[in-house]
Amino acid sequence: MKNDFKQGDLVFVPSSVRLVQFNHEKNHSPSFVHKHTITSKPSRALLMDSIDDYCKIYYNGEYWFAKEQDIYKGES
Image (cartoon, rainbow, N blue to C red):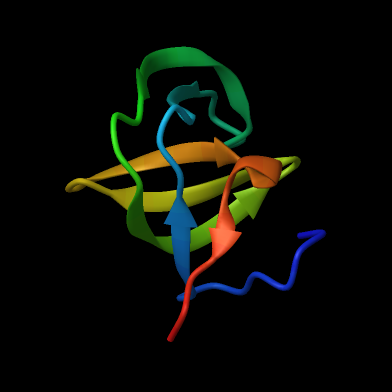
């Protein structure tokens, strides 16, 4: 990850951020977008992992991917 993010960090997700869920191939690499949403209000999420330029977060009861550049490290 390019930012100071590490697994388990609390991250800030601003409003109007596009979150996606990928359909995965057998090698677990993202292949195509299966589902997406746009955040309607700022919130916090738990950082789970990162793949390429995306961060896997736990947001609103589901796992989503956000572009790393769109989220910020939350306060502890």
